[in-house]
Length: 185
Image 1: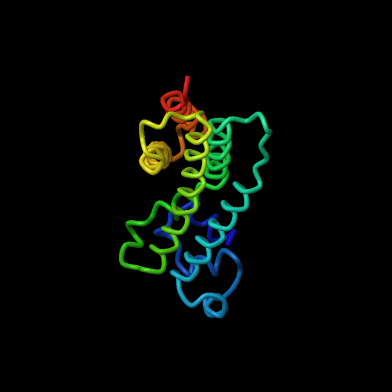
Image 2: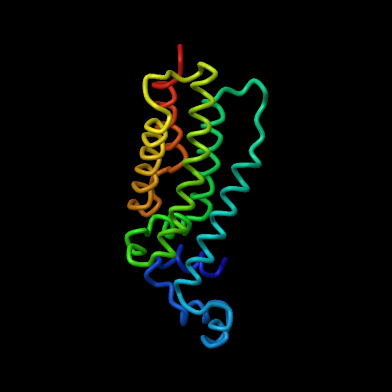
């Protein structure tokens, strides 16, 4: 998984081939095929690895009793943005859904990752609204889409800049603006 991630980080997802991956890890291509039947199977394994890592990382965030819903939302996204910064290949794979369009298993795995993040965010928004920390003018599901969409746009801009922009700083700025819009006064 690390070798595939490194190859994608350096050369892009289009340059992940079983032949090149086998060379990277010092195996013959037939030996690699004993572990993975195809490039898609490698990508599925990568996506599962990312999904498990993300879920575990976010679930292990520790919050204080005094943390507001906004504090928790900031922590969730800061964790995610730092993970993307540390392993940009995650973004290349997760955001390659256009490439996966005709491959149902890969599309489904990306959808699972998106569903997990959506579940964390909607739970946060619902908690904030229930505790009167967030306003209730916009439904939790719509607000979740707005938050995730804004963060996704930030990640896409970072990816298109070839990681030249500051993903964490820009993400914090965007999220801070959204939190200010939705927090109760």
